[in-house]
Image 1 (cartoon, rainbow, N blue to C red):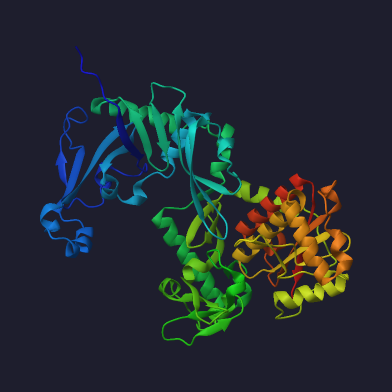
Image 2: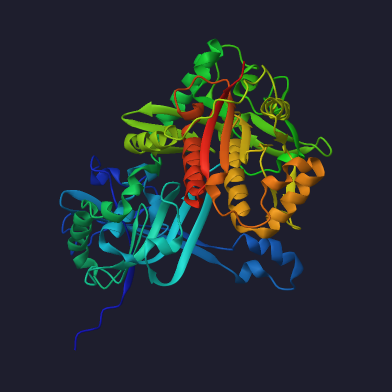
Length: 531
C-alpha cells in the first residue's frame, strides 16, 4: 500500500531572469550545499544554514526574578534552507525557515506570488487580503473572512488600496489546496520534491497570464518600488533636485515637506528643523525652503536621513513628534516611463495611464473662481477670515462639532447662505491636504445621514450667527444637490497638475469627490494663488 502523501506548505520565489545559479545566494559563508539527485544529478541544489542553540534574549529579563537558572534550561535555534530549481529557463527558489534571508532581496521578481494567485483564484474565492492604504499615513490592514468570498466583500478601494498579499482557493484543485501570493508564493500542495520542477513550470505559466486584468487590473496602477538598485537611483534624483533647488527655488515645485503621520493639529504650535552643527530654524508649517536655508550649495542623502523635523506642542512648547527629514519629503519624478513618488519614506511606481486617468477626473471637476487671492505670507486662519468677508459668508474655521468622545468634525471653513461648504488648506503638505478631503467627505456624509450631527451643527452655528442656522436642515436633505462642497487649495506653486497638487493628494481629492458625488452633492474645486 502506497504511503499517503501529506499536505506540504511551500514558499516559492521566482528569481530575476538575468541571474545565474551562482548569483542566487547572498553569501555562502556558513552555508552547506547538498546534492539532490531527483532535482539535479550533477550540481548542488539544496543549501542550508543553522544557528546553534542558545538561550533566548528574553531569558535575561526573567532570570533575575526566578530561583532557577533559566539560561541553563532554555534554548532556541533556527534553521534555513534554500532549494534551487530550474524550469523553462528560469530559476526558482523554494525556502524554509529563514531561507529567504540567504538570498539578496533584489534578486526576487516583485509580485510573482500575487500575480499567480490573481490569475488562478476565482474572484469569489478569496479568503484573506493584506492591503496598504496610501494617504498621509500608510495604513496596513489584514482582512480575513469566515469563508471564501468576492473582492467586494473586503470593502477595499482599488484606487487607493495597494494589494500586498492575497489568499484564496484556486479554480484548479489539482494545482493546490490554497495559495497565498505576495512577492513569494505560499502554496499548500501534495507535490513531493521530485515533482517541484514541473510545479514551478506550471506556476511560471500562470504568472505570465493576464487573466488577473479582468478583475484586478488595478494592481498595475500603483506598486511599491522594492528594488534597492532602483531606490538608489531615485534617491540620487531626489538629492540632485534638492541641490538644484538650493540654486533656484523655482525648481522645488516637485518637492515639499509633509508630516508623515496623523497628528492633533490643535496641539501643534509649529515646527523646527534640527541639523547637527547648524542653527535650529522654526516655521509655522513645514516648508522645504525653510529647511534648505541651512545649506549653501549642496546637500547629501545622509543629511536627509540625519536631520529632523520636530513638531512643537502648543500646550507646553515640548516635542510632540520628531521625524527624519527623509520620511517627511514628498517628491515625484519621471523615470523610465513611470512616475515615481516618494511619500512617508517609501517609493511608489505609478503607471502613466493611471496617472493620466486620475488627473483627468480631477481636472473635469467644476472650478470656482470667486475666492479672493491669498496675501503673501498669509496663514490659513487669516485667509479664511478674508475669504468669508469677501463672500459675505460665515467663517467656521476651527469650530468643531463634538461627539462626546475623541472624535470631532469641522463643518467647513466657510459657509455661504447658498448652502456652499468651502474647505480650505494651504498647499504646505500632502498630509494636511488629505485631512482637508477627509474633512469634506465626513462633513457631507454626516449632514446627510446623521441627525445628531445636524442638530449639534445647528446649535453651533446658532451661537455664532443665527442667520445661518437654517442652512443646516433639521431633517435629512431631500436633495443633496442643493448643497455644494468646494475644496480650495492656497498655493504658490506653478506645478502643472490639478490644483498644483502632488500625485497622492490628487488621488485623495478624486476619491473624496467621487464619494460626495455618489451621495448627490455638487463638488467644485479652486486653486487660490498666493500673491
